[in-house]
Length: 99
Image (cartoon, rainbow, N blue to C red; front, top):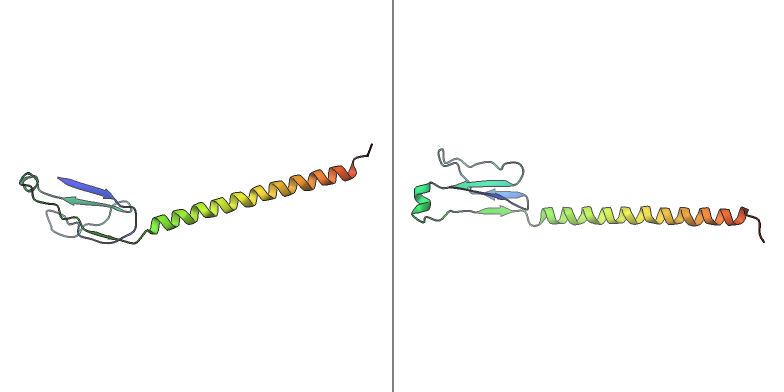
């Protein structure tokens, strides 16, 4: 049996090991860890010891900063568009003949 978890943050420590060599395994494709258990142990009801220490909310903070930056950028572009529209309207009103 195998269990794979895609964890939501940077992994600082884990206890995942290869069943055949009993060596610690590496993370796969970023934050994916796998734990294995022999089928006989699983059928006997032996628990799987899954332990991981994660960096606290590193991905959450990066995502929030990304959205804040995107929102600030969108507001800056919107402000520039409004400023250009008002400026163009004012210059057209000044050059057009009156009634």
